[in-house]
Image (cartoon, rainbow, N blue to C red; front, side, top):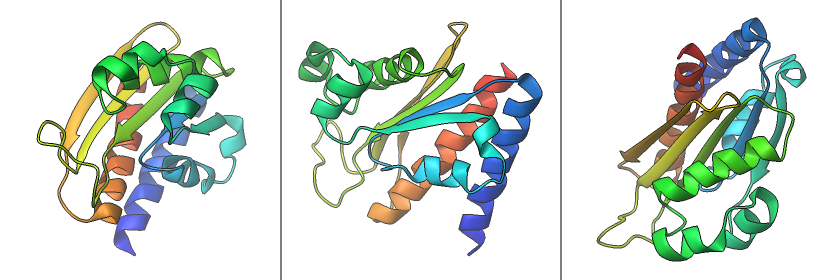
Amino acid sequence: MAEDEALYALAREVGQILRLQERVLVLAESCTGGWVAQCITDVPGSSAWFDRGFVTYSNQAKYELLGVPSEIIEVYGAVSVETVRAMAAGALSHSAAGVAAAVSGIAGPTGGTPDKPVGTVWFAWQRGDGICRVKHMQFGGDRRQVRRQAVRVALQGILDVCRD
């Protein structure tokens, strides 16, 4: 499938830039459920530049594995800029990586609200030197389409933050 080939090509490019910069990646995924890590680990030799991935689907996992303060999720929700920033920072602090990507969203078909409809996804990319980028996207399509689009944006964001 052409879409899978495009994701694989992005993942290869991520590996190339991380190798060139001698950086290592860590992931904190929620709505993508490990799909970004799957793309990364499909690339031969990814163990040289990928440390680990946290699939923190539940709020409890975000607290326990990434150290996201419960107050952040209680006040802003799991799908928020505050939460993905905390997820990225937590992934960095719980790994040996120098670049983190975090994603949290509502893939549907249920779970949306008027303020955060289905397709709402927040991203954060953070480097060990403190550079951090965040992005909000509103995707259309079914659950799989929302998740696939989120994987693409997550991979592209890793490239972008490495190029900053």
